[in-house]
Image (cartoon, rainbow, N blue to C red; front, side):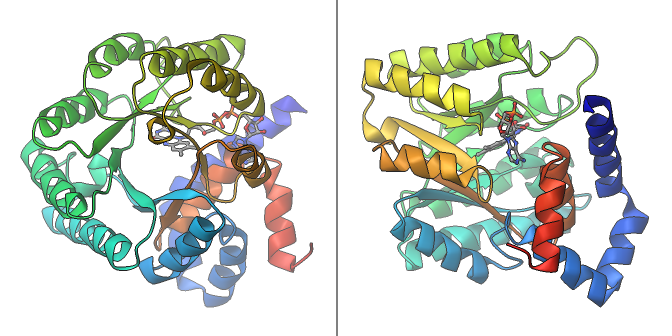
Length: 314
Ligand SMILES: Cc1cc2nc3c(=O)[nH]c(=O)nc-3n(C[C@H](O)[C@H](O)[C@H](O)COP(=O)(O)OP(=O)(O)OC[C@H]3O[C@@H](n4cnc5c(N)ncnc54)[C@H](O)[C@@H]3O)c2cc1C
């Protein structure tokens, strides 16, 4: 059974990156609309306007939010600058609509993969726009080929911006060292397990050791009263972190339980109802096909949810 699920997950990851399949989907209106029904549960929408409506609603429901314009690895300076302008628009929309939201981004989406200067300059523009509304900007963690550049860019930008935060992947062995360095910076550290395939020997597979490693980082952050985000859908880890929060009693602005919009929402809602700080991460844009495939691949049972969403079953 596990073998079959893994094979299905691998196939979905492949399908997500298959340009022919993507072009076919984008070019076929009926198929596009059908598959979009399955994506709707996980995305803010295709536009910022749709997303800010959902964010406003979730703020009313008591959740903090984060907004990301989806995309990564742009190939031209023009695309990087367009994405940067969109992130500046997000900041402005958060301010104009008085939303309780941060901004999340991949540095490769704003040009880091093209040149370090381009990525750094664009990040600077977004941080400046965000600072006018006291908005936190959270840098995502990408593939291991990018980790050095991402961390270096974060450290440099942190010298001029105090509204910047970073994501670290608990599954990477190198994170032990990165963590030691980055905990010296005041910016929030978001801990995730890690989503990318890595070369052999670079990462800890899903399992007890990774869960303990993840909890170890959270313990160190909470006990040091360092700003952090506990970004996982893992119920058992969330329950263990509750004990740490009750033990260390961090200020409310110093921690948050963060989940992707549409995933294990009932767990996040239960945490909110118990009085813990909770946050929903929204992504939006036209690239939802890849995002949908990834959400199903990481938890293949979601395929049944997708089928139910497409046919309109409860
Ligand atoms: C806010 C946020 C930001 C993130 N940013 C990054 C980043 O910058 N870089 C990066 O590499 N990764 C990022 N990730 C993804 C992360 O690395 C994991 O791949 C992802 O969160 C799944 O791992 P998990 O901790 O939920 O635990 P897992 O061990 O993968 O899953 C534990 C349990 O969580 C539930 N679950 C997990 N995924 C799903 C799903 N899709 N649908 C339904 N239930 C599910 C299931 O019950 C599962 O048994 C982010 C995740 C979150 C929540």
